[in-house]
Figure 1 (cartoon, rainbow, N blue to C red):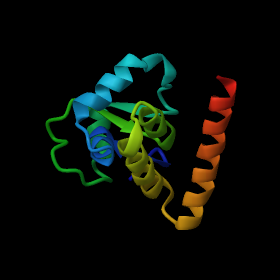
Figure 2 (cartoon, rainbow, N blue to C red; figure 1 turned 30 degrees about the horizontal axis):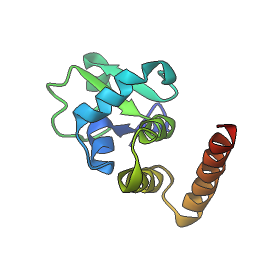
Figure 3 (cartoon, one colour; figure 1 turned 120 degrees about the horizontal axis):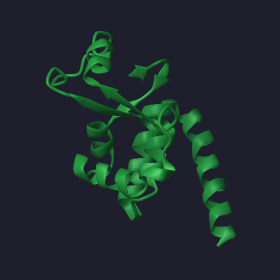
Length: 124
């Protein structure tokens, strides 16, 4: 699904990817809010924005929603950094599959993630 030509995912979908609940995603977001940039990592839609956007996307239950967070790949991966172990790995894989689709694209993204993680470890 897209918003302004950018692939996005709802908070509920993101929570499903990480086998958690929406509250946990919002808790992580609020704890590290300064690391997230609106328009780059997420979009916050008002009721009016939701009504306009929902004309092109079919998501049940939006009729009574007053605010909606849509996460980009970058925002989803920032959320993913807060999870550990198997849950983190499964969530990463789910995000990669959702945002990048093909196995070739997966490999590229995974290689970039591993390089990024290696740099972070080296910095410590």
